[in-house]
Image (cartoon, rainbow over all chains, first blue to last red; front, side):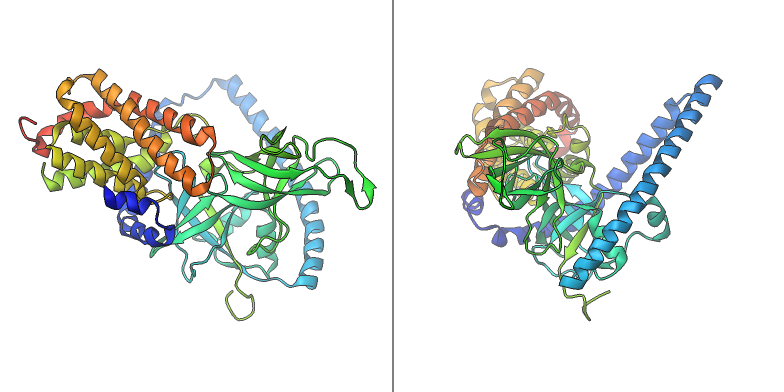
Length: 309
Length: 166
């Protein structure tokens, strides 16, 4: 008991290696059990499904065809946006130069404690233990997924694919600990997570005040220290809160290890801070559902020249 | 209490904690039952005092190893749970489901509060959600799941070789 009491107050870097003892046993057992559970669930769904009568099937087919037409339309708009994004990214790359790579990793397990927000991922090969960021894809490219046998491979950020992948991703957490076969990612919603951020106005399409994104438990974050801006580019701004419901929250403009600002979430509530009436607090909903994370990409800011793919 | 059955119990419960518990979690806040706590309660109710406390401490340590928070928080708090249950078990009907519910609620709240206090000190986040709401909700859900899991564990009591009288 005394050892446990002392261990609670020790820095994490001394106690984290102990977790390497259980991961090689826990992960295979959990994967087998999770797979068996999914098989059972699939079989149960097949047993209980009853095909509808002819009328209902026709309505379903019509509905599906309508959805497919909508998806095609959205895909065309998406392609156009991607072309514009590609042009902007190309300009930025010429000015600053691309660096780094995206390393795919599968999410293996959730945190065993309900209110702690971390995920155990498989440690990618040639992965050096540093405080890299983990991102999740926002748009799923099913065509590309089908073409990638065995899943995604390490993608260089100097390539068009790598840049597209990064721009279509959402920041979800930071690598906290790397073991022999696994690594632990602390999500942005963990109470121990503090990340610099910036508000982006959805109404004016302009960046807003900077803030600190603090985790508040499952699927919940708060942007703190959001100061009201009195002017922008020499123009006096009207009185009012610095952000509105629906505004986006991005990662900070100069966040170490991230080549670009990345989407974190969306503002769902604006209120004045209890501690300081001069600043605001924003409730931020994550852009992706952290509960359903199956795979992430690690942003490794290694030099692109001669260091990797 | 024999070592091999305890190790098997610990391993199976830990695997279920990280796979089954999230699947039956409630609401977007992911309130899930603590199956390891129920196993610790089972050990503390029936094993000798020394074995019970060591067993509870070990189960808490396993939970720490499978989590990303400060190491030792649950080992310490589960040790307290073992101490507490050993102290009061003579006054309880150990087979009664109400006893299981009450113990899981009280000691679940105790262990979760201790662990979340340690989390708060480490992170500097003293929000009411972290310190009270989450531990209380998880303890409540654990208490609801306790009778079912204890019913299952009691069937395997003889394999644990607990002493006749404790």
